[in-house]
Length: 71
Image (cartoon, rainbow, N blue to C red; front, side):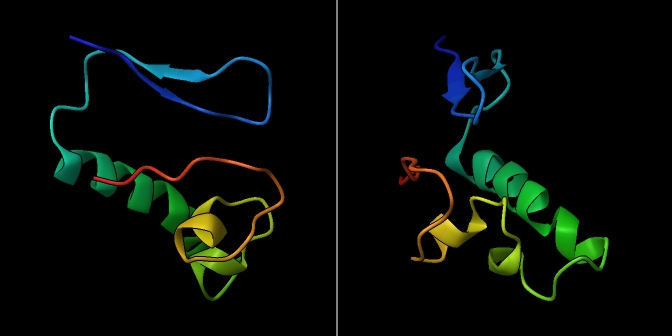
């Protein structure tokens, strides 16, 4: 089974070992992470958070260049 590597601003990627089996499960985790600043009432929408990749997934341009996972 392959490991999923998610790019981070640091030089080391976040490695999730053998835990993501379906695209649905991956999106559940991505959405959970993107919604954290909304739940904390830091921003009204996930894509409004300056340091979130939610901007990229919403079609905007974030602070960092990144690939968007598509299935």
